[in-house]
Length: 234
Image 1 (cartoon, rainbow, N blue to C red):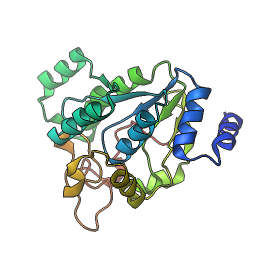
Image 2: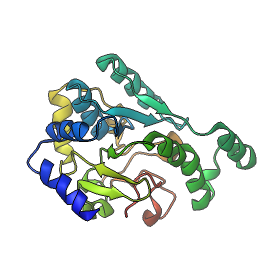
Image 3: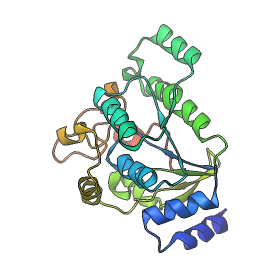
C-alpha cells in the first residue's frame, strides 16, 4: 500500500488542487467522492468540483442536529451550482432506540454516550456513503489540529479501505478566505461569529481568542478525546 500511495503522490506532486482532483477523478472513475459539512474548506472544494464539472460525487451527513445557518448554506450551494449533494441520514431504528432510552441530550453525560451518538449519526451513514468508492476527498488542513500535522495530503484509510486525498492540506485559513472572497462563494456566517469548526448545533460553540481551533467542539470533554471518528488517525 505504501508503494501504491507513493505512486499516486508522485503523479499529482506538481498539480494544483483542481488539477489533482480532476486527475484522480479520471484515475478512479465513478469511485471518487467528496464529503462536505458546508464549512469554509468544504465550500472551497465544492466550488472546485462543481465549477469545473469534475465528475466527483458530493455528499453530506445529515445528522438531524445541524445549525439553521448550515442548512442555509446547503440550499444556496444547490441553487448556485444546480448540482446534487447527496444526503445520508442515520438509521431510523438505531436513532429512535438511543433517544428513547437515553433522551435527546445523552451525549453530554459521558464520552461513551457522545461517541455512541456520533457513531449513529455520523459513522454508520459515512460507511454507506463511502461504500463502493476507492478515493475520498476531504477538506482537512494541516493547521486545524496538532494530530493533523502528522498526516499527509494523501493517505490510506484502513477503517474504510480507501485512499483519502486532502487537496488543500497545506493551505492556511487566509488562503481559504481569499479563495472564498475571490470567487464570491457562499459560506457559513457562523464562521464570522467565532466558529472555526462547525458540526452539530448542541456540540459546537464559538471559540474564544487564544483557544485551540477545535476548542468549540465537544467543549465539555478533554482535548485528547475530541474526535468523532470520521477522520481517525491511523
